[in-house]
Image 1 (cartoon, rainbow, N blue to C red):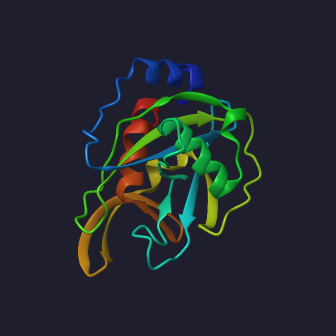
Image 2 (image 1 turned 90 degrees about the vertical axis):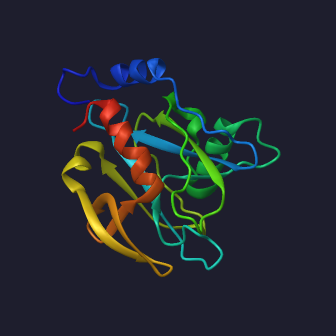
Image 3 (image 1 turned 45 degrees about the horizontal axis):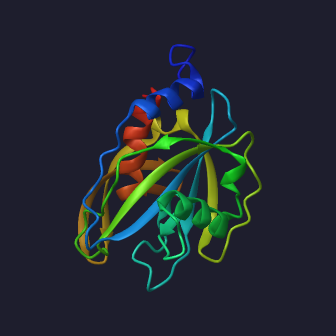
Length: 194
């Protein structure tokens, strides 16, 4: 993805295949998954980010995120959850793409958030598809992966009365932080994008 040295998506797929994702003990935790959706399927892909709609009952209300959500009883596994949630939130059918691999589990670090563990799955699509956002999605962005490292910031943030200093990616008026940043940063390192 970075010059010819990394070998593009094939090299990323090999790195993901060799990566043993770190798993969190899920006993007693809410299971969820997200999709890191890359398009086009070439050496200069963009990643799909969504902004969650403001909703008083959503602890991630108004935040930038990857498409995904909680596992339902009918979901065969967390991969099924990522595919279903992405389709529900964006109308993108990930079954038409390629699953490149899995990343480490993540859990929230802020105490007021629900006890959830999130499994990220990386997909690639031949071209950026049309996004038809659900009512849960306020907007979406296709961000070139190479644009993320220069957008890296550390900023003060106040959320629900908590004053924090957070790492993130500043994309114009949008700050990508929290669990989404903690998923994307090691992914970029794995992809050889620095």
